Image (cartoon, rainbow, N blue to C red; front, side):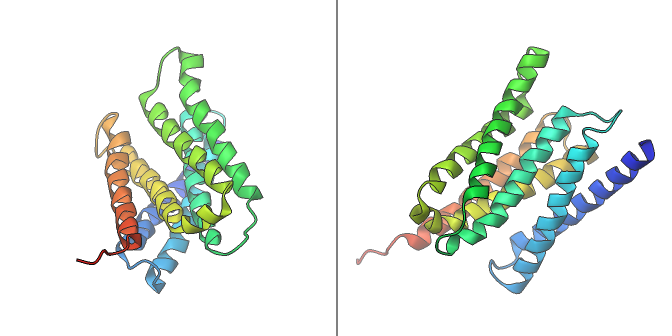
Length: 215
């Protein structure tokens, strides 16, 4: 079992590194062109399987880690829902799975916040921050999924926001594992800068939609 865990950790780290590079390429290339699409697909699958492998590692004997497990769920949510958001630009997509994913993330966020309180009697700042972010995204998803018309208009924002959320997870893991930024800051700094970049893109999209007034 130890050998299996070791191999799985190597696979997890390798896939995470590929996701880190592919995600960066997808970010810096022009949205919608061939390089962006291909690097985005590589990022999606490498990050997804990296996150799924983290879920397996976190439940193996001698490697049990509730923290790693919840972060793996968190990353999987962003990647899967961000990729599925591409479907929303088409009329009448099936939303059953998307609703299940949103509710699942809502419950996961609640667990991430409450788990340390129940079992340790204190708040875990990192899990609280990530759990709160997950709850906010999940509630927004549930609300949008009730209105297909608004959902279709918001597909690009959802895609960009979720995929960037997944990339933030990859960068965070890279920084924490290699201890580039010590302590709790290593967990939170990527989210701060990533959220700022995300808001920049939302601002650009809103600016494009705002009609120009005659002078």
